[in-house]
Amino acid sequence: MKIKYFKKCNEKTTSIVDGFKEVGIKNPDLKYRESIGKLNNIKNIGDAAANKQMLDLLKKGKLIKSKTKTNEDIYIDKLSEIHSFIKTNGKKFFYSWTHAQPTFEKAKQVVKKGKNSGLTCIVPTRWALDMVGINPIGFYAKNGHFTKYDNNMQKKLIKISKENGVGLTVKQAVDKKLLKKGDILTFKERTHTVSYSGKDYICFDGGTAAEEKGYNKVGIKIDYATSKWKNVKINEILRWKV
Image (tube, rainbow, N blue to C red; front, side, top):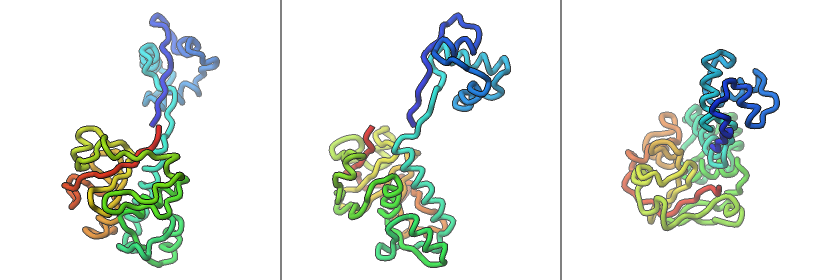
C-alpha cells in the first residue's frame, strides 16, 4: 500500500480548516474532512476532539492524504479471492494438473455447473497473475528455477536469486524481514511454487493443501513455518517492480 501524507501546517495554527488551507486544500468542507478522517481512523469529524486529533497529525506531517493499492496488494487480493472460493467449494477441487482450468473464471464456471476442477501448487499463482494482466502460460518452477519468465513478466516482476531471502527458509526470511507481500517463491531443487501473502509465514499454495488436508478444510493458505516445506530453502524469488 502506497501512503501519501499532507505537508506540515504551521505549529501555531488553531483550526483544522485553516491548517488544510495552509497545505493547499481550497475547500476543506465537512465532507472532505470526513473522507480524510476515514483514511486516518478518526471518527466523529466536526467534534472538537476529532478536529484536534486531525490538526495534531497535520502539524506533525503524519496526516494521511491518500492510500493507493500497489500491484502486490492487488495480486494478493486476487489470491485471497481464489482462496475463499476454493474453501467454500472445496469438495469440487482435487489435486490434478491435467484437470486444472486455464483461468479462475473458467474454474468458477466449471464448479458452478457441478463439475470438478484440478489444482496444483502453481495454479492459484497462475490464475492470480492472469487476473492482474500477466500471461502465465508455461510459467512454473522446475528444479528450483522459474521457467517461461518471458518479456511479459519482466515488465512487472524482477527475478531475485542472490539475496533478500534466497537460501533461507520462508520462516527465516520472514523473521529477517526479507520477504515482501506478493513475492513468488520457488524452492531449491524442487518443482514447487508459492506466493507469499505478506502476513506471518502464510503462503498461497494449491499443491500442499491438496496433498495434506484437502481444500474443504483449509483452502490454499498454508503456514510455511509448520508445513512439510518448513525446512526447504528458497532458491529464486520474483518480486513486483516499484
